[in-house]
Length: 165
View 1: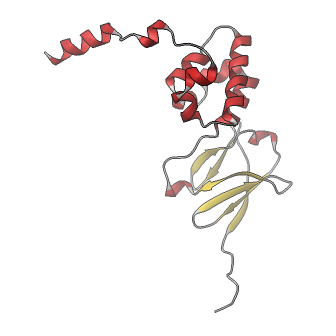
View 2 (view 1 turned 90 degrees about the vertical axis):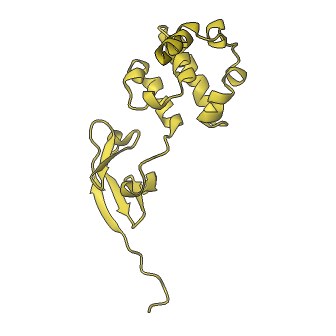
View 3 (view 1 turned 45 degrees about the vertical axis):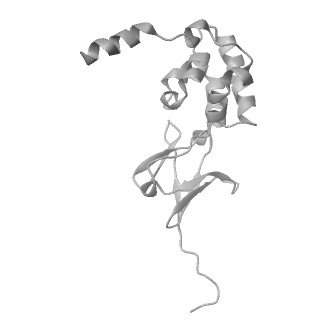
């Protein structure tokens, strides 16, 4: 056997679609800002993928799609994209994964206020994960909870009591 391990990988070019997705192992993987890049190179190993741009910089990397059903979301990139197009935020594929408290905070009719709130969350994401921001939301954002959030919703409580009968 040789003294040096032989690298086993598959390398090919991938093209993003208009939704910033590339297809690897018959699965679409979302890569933020991919459609702005002319050509991407994918390197597959047995357990991982790495996608490079023309300059050889890593654009995305992770486990092969057939190995896992869950993927981590890069919330800072998602919020940066939402900042450029705030009206598309609620139609985004990531909106349903956003914690309800933060989604409620971002759901405002004033576009300037919404952009300021996105900026604030981007700043917080540089030092805190999204889960921690959600748990310590009022402390980190610096607002007080509304009386509606503090009170128990008696209508839903009464509805549960009726459903048990």
